[in-house]
Length: 114
Image (cartoon, rainbow, N blue to C red; front, side, top):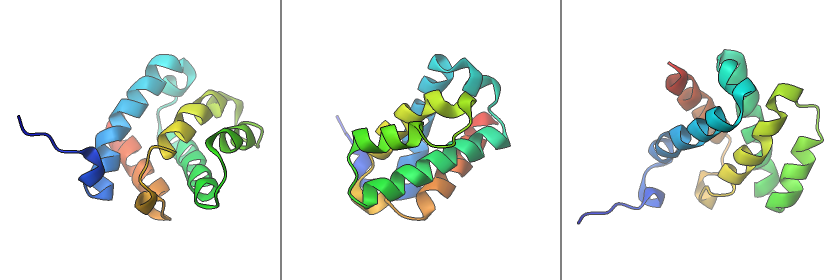
């Protein structure tokens, strides 16, 4: 049986491969996010991703990142998305922690939402 590790995929393909799993989980667990799955919703969650990427790249722990972002000025309807998004960012390989990550996330989010 042929198996490909998702960690060997190019960054864009890896994010596009894992993003539907993340968004599916968010949609099931977060009705407010699922109902507002628009440009605004994708942009807001992409900002969370961008902040989490910066904090992880700066050496912050996953717990500290989630706590800091949850207590930041994020709109209340996106607060429940912080933990799964931070969890997802901390699964990314180090080489994927770039300025492009949030943009790729936003593009994949918009594509997923149709």
